[in-house]
Image (cartoon, rainbow, N blue to C red):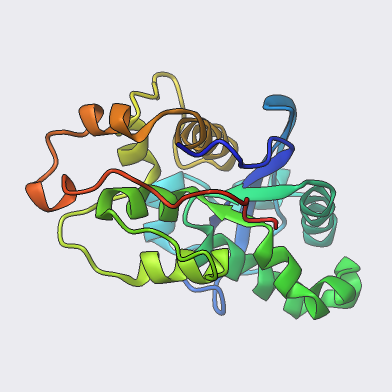
Length: 240
């Protein structure tokens, strides 16, 4: 059971104009600030946009260029606020941020580090990486029966797990919610704040439920994933 993860965290999520951090932009940010395991604040914001939105992306989240033009906040202001939230927390949590959201965030900062006031953060990007927890990677690791070596940095563990192809194994927010019996009723999934709140529930389940209970919930999975339900031994959290 994961019982040593930080309880003072920020959970965040992006919706984007496409799927390439280099060519596409952040459209929406969602954030939940958690202290002692309780949500104390949430916020979300659309961002002003200066590029087109991939139709495939709009089909997923429903955000249009017109929405960003009419409701969007200045990009530097929103990104700076998110970064401050991340720096103020013991750890920050995303779902698949290792392979998506963190890459978009880094690229956004690189475009204008001085304007965002984040030059120092970019120079110490490894500190942002080292305080990151990826619930998608943890869930996938459990399904695969994979464990983290005690000497392996958390980010490298997340990358290793997410890079391993496993036929038929899905670990998106919806799949994780279904396995953990987290209700999505009335939730507008694929909007940033909604996905943040679902990710927080996944984080809680990973942290507070014994994996033998998880095993009973997902027992219908193919036999290769039944061989081990243990996840990494968490004698230390990703922030240490």
